Image: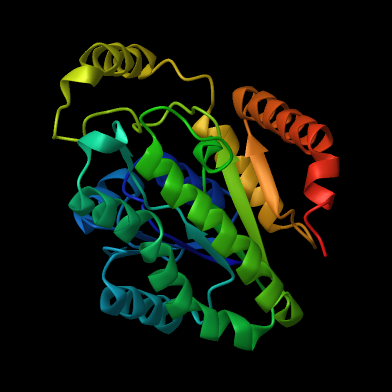
Length: 275
């Protein structure tokens, strides 16, 4: 029986991962900024479930939540850094406050929770960390400069952390979903830049209309992704990356092909920059 610690478990994919882990017979520490919302979706605390209030941007609160998890269940075997949101908008229309808020949750929040959980996981010499990235961590997108930046940074952190902690029997997996039918595109999850620049008006209107049309129509099934993560958590050596959904798989294939073509086209010039 494993003990899971899941951030952002009040809605969306976090709820589905918690349910899948419980269904598998494991114990879950489900956290969210509003504990009442976690309880609403997962039920009251039980032998398998502990709900904890946690804003991942608060390092002290992250430590308190991890301490509560260890006090209740004795260990953290699987850490799922799932909490996050998307700030979408043209870069010129965003502010530094927007940047700081996006990174506070999507990146620094992962730092806070991981830093709090690592000592107990390292001492156990066994554990799995799943960092929820996105197709936006593989491929930049129009109106996604802040969100993509936070996810690209998360991927670099995850690759580096994996090398640091593998000797202790800990593995990091970056999960890269394409569009899944969660509430990501709802007003509750998305934020937009507020400093409108007239040159972007037409494209902004088109993109926001596209987001509204796609909301609730995404092809990815969150329950199936949650089940896949439970399976990966039980592998002896889970992968560094897990790309989820056909759209993400095809986009990753296309990006890799494009990168390989660019390397090939400029190989001589690239190699010529050495002494």
